[in-house]
Amino acid sequence: SSKSSWFSKSQPTVSHPSFEKYKRNNLAYVLKHTPERLKDIDEESLSEAILMAMLTGQEDGKPNNLMLEEIPEKPGKYRIVPFDNDQAFVPEVSYPSPTSRQKGKQSRVQVKSVLFCLDQMTGPIHPSVVKALVHLNPEKLLRRWLEKLLKLTQEHQALFTFSQLNDFWKKNETYIGTPFQKGDIQEVYFKLMKMQDLLKLKPKLTHLELLKEVLPFVYHRYSKIFKNQILL
Image (cartoon, rainbow, N blue to C red; front, side, top):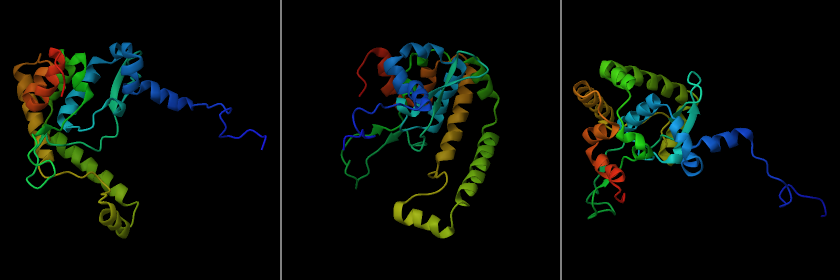
């Protein structure tokens, strides 16, 4: 046929404006093409994001899982927002089990986040973040959070029949909700308590110094960046 096809090379491709905005604000794009925008990241929000990465133990904190989002009340400033957070609350270090294919290999650091590579890691944690963290009640905070998660899980599960929920698990090991391993919440609680104790004694700790105390194996890996060593 002589008529032009939608799939022909002559057909112009137009990206949707929202996709273009998403692409430009994705941290992977920013680091590669517009690194000067990093100076526009709000320091308080960045401190919150770094500490949250320590608390939640992200295994997949790569750049394309993070976005820059404008802060309405702070014109010209951005915060870093994570998404695709399904690989969270992982142990700091994984040890090969005797029966696994990794048997005989060395343990490896599981918690990974590009935030731990930013220059701001060597700077002090923002005073407002220190103040908020020192004065919060970890037990009440976690209890409120879990209550909200429970309600959200119930709302999500209500969209399916009991039979469908069973099938999801039996066929795909898919759980509709927020699954935790035994000890996950206890680990977050202990991290919060440790952060509080450290920041009460030394409120001007840098992000890197806090990482050293809270996740020492992760610190050992990422601190090499700031010593111009190769990260393995």
